[in-house]
Amino acid sequence: MIVFVIFGTVVGSGFSSGKEIMIFFSRFGVASYFYILLAGMLFFALFWFFLSKSKKILACIENSKIINWTTLFVSVVFCASMFAGLKSLFSYVPLWANVLLVSVVMAICLFSAFKGMDGLAKINIILMPIASLLFFAVIISCLSTSTAFDFSLSPLAGLLYCPLYVALNTCMSGFVISKMGEGLTKKQTFFVCLFSTLLLVVFLLFANLVLQQNSEAIYSDMPFLYLTSGKNFSFVLAYVVILIGCLTTLISLCFTIKTSLDKAFKSEEINALLSVFFPFAISSLGFSQIVSFLYPICSVIGIFMLFYLIYAEIRT
Image (cartoon, rainbow, N blue to C red):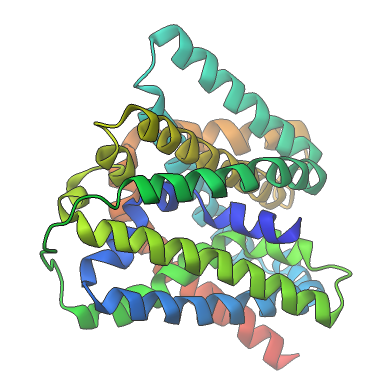
């Protein structure tokens, strides 16, 4: 259950659509495979840190206004990108269905904000195994074409983008991961870190292989939807995967945002509403703009946040 919760917080619309993988890895060519393996080692180390030091980290987050407001800012940006991704997805359906789907998603997010970790775990344990199988099917269906990849940046730039990617995802989900680490033994912590990392690395490697073969997809907001656009069945699968990826990350983020707001404002009901409707309003900026411009900013913030938490742990 914990593995799927961790996996669900990382596999959002940016990951499942391929846009995030293209920006942080694929455009570095062959070197991207090395950076993915490096990212796996960094993920394992940080998962271990958040799970094994969960009580101290939660106390640090609880008592530090800097960490609380940083977590709030990054979570709002991520949440807005998930909503923007859903808006892009729902543009494929009629207006009445669009309104209905948005309403259902908002209701699920509000449910998770009010129910907390129990609601989060129950939704992830159902959706993530399904999404994992469908994602593999989408990747396999996109392996048929092959084009030379045009480098947009020096491969050495990946040494910067790789840790930024890890920081981007772990600073956002650090609170949720720490909450899941309460009560785990060292052996359980090790296996949770191992299986969570393996899942991420396997999906990153296979997705990167496909994107390497289809470099023109870099210009699309959602590369995997673009690559399956001529294949009806594969397109539906890609659509469902991105939808689940958005939803599982959204429910984690809404819970995190509400938790941060609870420390500043007393009304839990108003905080729950704000945790959903405020990032929904920001999502009007557009999915591609948020991923391309705000994600790198959040990555830098995430690195400082991680250093702060690690420093606080060493100091105590």
